[in-house]
Image 1 (cartoon, rainbow, N blue to C red):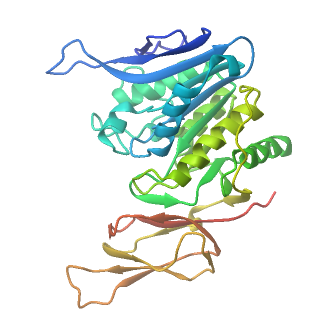
Image 2 (image 1 turned 90 degrees about the horizontal axis):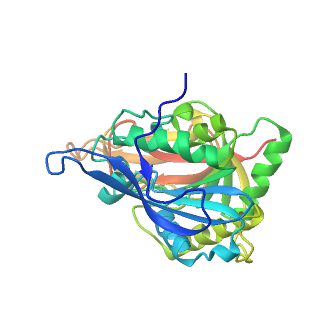
Image 3 (image 1 turned 90 degrees about the vertical axis):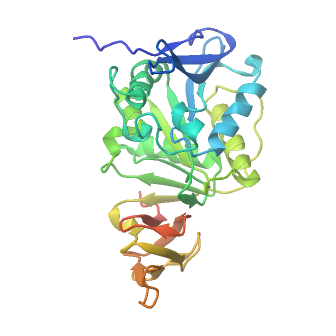
Length: 336
């Protein structure tokens, strides 16, 4: 049985040459607009035969670095320096991006937990379905730019699913080095794995890489330099960009995140006092944070501890926590 057609429609020719900008139209009928549609920005820059690349940001709406970087790339790229075709979706979950929220205010949908999507579902499920059924089949490679958003901050990193073969592992780690973030890490499957864009790309049989670029609910010059330079270096390495990219500022440390013990969570609700900083090298049992019970401040705080040794690459930002909130996560050096 053939797959159902997505209800989203592009205003531009995704397979055409030259630079085109416009919107994906997502039909959305509400009280104030009976026949309305949600405008999701999209651009396509094509120039003959060559690689077919999808660049995405705003998968989570409160992750701003990629949205800024890809908007600038749309403005700056000349079709003459492109080989093949680059499709750019800078604010993929547009309702979430407009709200500055990780999830959509329309349906509370988390786009990166919604694949493969649903052509008749809510707005987030329909966006996921369009990406998986219409955009990924047009591509050879997808780069999905994430950051820590409002609740986390990272050592700027690239990441990807651990490949199945040594050859694929070498290609993945080579591209991480080319992107040039301070850290590049591989993750194993499991958890939300089958509902993410990473899994969608795997189902489509195309190469994928993601990032976690700083975060903290802000955009910094340092994170933007990593994002913008890294995107151009990857495009150049894949043969999609002829102009020379800037040199990387960092030598990438290759790492891995291989299980739930790499994460540290709040054991109780309260006020989070961090006890270690990003980049710290810690041992198993190290105290990670104190959770102060601000409703009964005469009580001693609860201590969160790391379950294993590793390097701190991610840290929570907001001071108020609930039991189960992620405070940190670690990475360890990559073992082939």
